[in-house]
Each structure stands twice: as C-alpha cells, then as structure tokens.
Image (cartoon, rainbow, N blue to C red):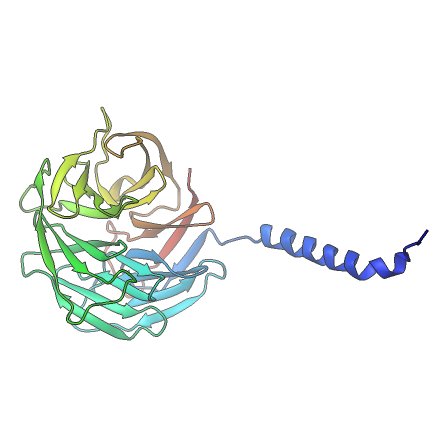
Length: 312
C-alpha cells in the first residue's frame, strides 16, 4: 500500500486556494455608479468597446471620448474637428472600427477604435437632415435620419471590412411608419438576430417599428395600450428591448414576443442620477446611460457623466 506524502499535496492546495481567492476578488470588484466625462463635452451617444472600454461622442465638436467602466478613467480619443458632430455610435469588434452618426452634418464618420484615426467618412444626406443613430449587422451598417422617413445603408463584407469604394444606399421607410415633418422622428435603431429586420423607435409618436432591412417596409410593433414617448436610444438584449425615454428620465423595459412583432412594457428603470439620458450600452448585468442634460444650458464648465443602473 502506497501512502501519499501530504507535503507533496501542498503546492496543488495552494494553487487551488489562490485560484479561489482570485475568482472571489473578481466577483467582488465594484464598478463606479457614475463615470465622469470632460466638463463641457455635451455628449449624446455611447458604444461598448472591448472589455470594459466604452466610447461617448460630443454633439457640437465631433470629439469621441474613450473611457473605462471599471476604473472610471479615460481620455479624448478623437479630438474636436470643425464641421463634425458625434451622435449615435456603434463599435464593431470584428474590425475595431467605430461608426458614428454625424447629426446635422448629414455624414457618417468611421474611426479606428484603437488609435482614433479617421478611416473614412461619407455624405449620407443633405439639409434638412439629422443622422441620429446607427446599428451594425453582419454585412451592413444602418443609420436613422430623424428629419426624413429613410434609412441609410453602408454595405460591408461578411467579415465587417469596408468596401472600396464605400457606398451608401437610401432605403425609404414605408408601410406603418408615422412621419411628422419638422420634428424628431426615427431615432434609436437595433437589429433583430437574423440581421434582415431592424427595430426603430419614433421619438415623436412613442412607437416602435419592425423594418425590413432590404426595402424599408415597416410594421408597427404591437405594444397594446403601451407606448414609449420620448424614445431615444434603444438596446436589444435577447427578447428584451430597452428604450431610453430622455426627458422622462427613465428606461422602458419592453418584453418582446417570440416573433418580435409584439411586446409589453414590463418596467421603467429610473435613477435619481438621470439627467436627461439619451443612449445606453450594456455590460455585466448593468446598463450605462449617457446624461445629455438637454434641459441645462451648456457651458464650458457644465458637468456630464455616464450612469450605471441595474438592467431590470
């Protein structure tokens, strides 16, 4: 009979103990509930990057700030530039590209998410226009225009690479879409899992629509007696759609049906730290909302931030 020397087992036991402690410490990491942005930044859009990184854009300057949700620290990645604006944005982890909606400039801007280098830009529309938000699918990028019943599509390769030359396709919104001239209409946009259908929120009428990404045919998503007035940025997680209702200082939680044609508002997430949030990103069971503070006159010293709230 062989007797195991218990001393030989100590290295393995120590290793297991170290691993257990490491896992425990990771679980105990506390993320800041508020992440400060530069004073005077005037933010609007947010995009989740790799790991705990995030991006936020500046409306009047086109600058892009890159920060860390864990440390709360960051710096300006894309400096302010004349005739540029950064509204909604999305990061493509396949290529490291950051796609930015250019607001009243009518443009889409594409930056390297690591270096901040301007990779490309393209004119999507001319005034009156407001290129508001963006979503990335497997083979295309789609932008909303709040002042026109149309989506703009930038085709990509199946790996997310930009074609040469970069082209844009206008897709008129037809069917159920409600368009009210002279006000904000299409705002936030997300893609359904198959990538052939999109979801768009209409700020003016508080409605959601399923949009055929090929021809722009829209079907109003049946919310029963519910609505989502002041709908701004949206975020789809499985069958749950989060709708930021900016001036209402809340995020509507919409449980969607199996075929994504109907839904029910099951909750409104609010926070005393909300100050007219506009868009959201998700990380680690939490939502991160950008406080645009549209009800506060902007000055070089006005403070702005990103607020962390539970996702339910």
